Length: 117
Length: 114
Image 1 (cartoon, rainbow over the protein chains, first blue to last red):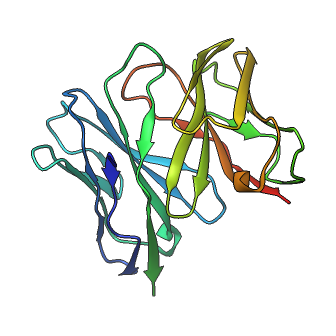
Image 2: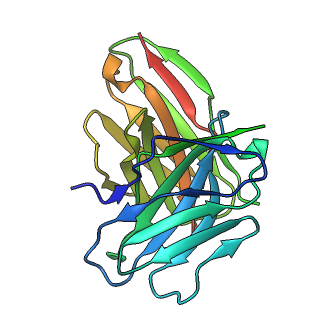
């Protein structure tokens, strides 16, 4: 079963507007972490923001914030004041409870965001 | 800043060849990972390593092997390349097993098998 679901293959947003990228997840663990990454057309994956399952406040990093709704198992990324440079693929990822070895990430299929003038 | 370096951005090889993809990180990270990325499928974990000479299979290890002889270097090996291994390959590293540590990625290698 898919553990990370990103239902929006593509999104458009006008410059200076805010946009929300959806992410839902499935886990039976109580302790887990959620990450968002950005991948520009050049290919590198850039870490944006992290939310822990026990964090009481929604994470924020500059123009990025994470709308974490634990009961609904959603962790949506909000980008405020979009810029042309925000055009990229965005991936949501989850790290489940540590098993004693390196903790692994499970990625969603991504959302391609296009910022327009 | 963490630097994860992959040896090639683009690589073209022939079916049946043995292919080596190299990855080096400069921050003394414990964990290293190899993913492949295909359109519509996101990133899928091939193998990972949590220590020198230690490795574990990810979700799609078939057709691949790995080597970690030194802490900073993690190699992905395609034993006998096939056309269905044409893909984008991404290497990543993370500091430790702490849950809030992000993985840091290299720039990726676009591999074409002809």
